Image (cartoon, rainbow, N blue to C red; front, side, top):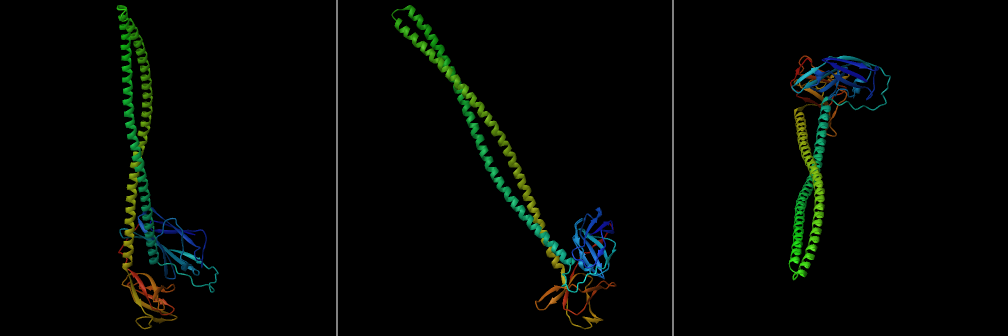
Length: 395
């Protein structure tokens, strides 16, 4: 593995072994950047060999990525550099370093051609699509979480209402018990008054018996009745006191239950408010995820709209393909736009496919044209892109 590190604009590396040619998918690299690169995105490491550059884009610090296998074909020297851009169109770059690739002795004559490493355009489109998929998944999960939160809220609302009804019933029962207590005490007082009246009647009866013998029998009967009345009054008083004590005990039980219900009610109210806050938070997060998804879609569409194509045929002439030794070349005017890839036209299927082995030679004087070099002429097109004008900043 190769460990790249960027400090300011200085790129350096450490390898745990020599770089051997002709491997594919085995050799990996990581990148670590200094803090001044924190606000830059789209970190890209460029690997160049024999004039052909391969890009690995959207790099995150500390994550392993495969070195493009094309630069490892055969022994030689590969050049490596890195860059990134900021949201305000600034670009940070690094120096270029050389890494030696030693021969492997590998024989590839009997193997089928390898698939080319995706170019920077394809990697970007893939990354945008992955981000869009993640946004859709996050929006779906947020929607499910919101629905689950709503179900919990509905259940809490039912429990909340039930506890509220029980609380109201307990309060009514307490009121009834208090009224029963007051009534029992009133009965006790009435019984006491009746007992006092009976005692007085007994005294009067004795007085009447002493004054007149004629009424002696009536007085005795009155005395007997008065004693019975007194006994009944005392019994009534004791029963009333017993009922009052029972009522008091029931009151204490009801008050204890009411206190527990009040505690449960307060807890339910708190949970109800918490659920409402969670639901509000989930709704806001779902809206934010949806906005991010729409923004990614907009970026993706703008990216596609900004891409254009320059078509060419396989005709051999002074203005098109020109024989140059064992190869053929064609010069295409690009107006200085960025070249994303070269595509060959598949006449049989009426579609365009990637061309893995075509060299590009840029006009370094004007930077407005490019020369393609191939072993035979072919019809195809260049995919070009209008890059936003950036500002190179020393970081």
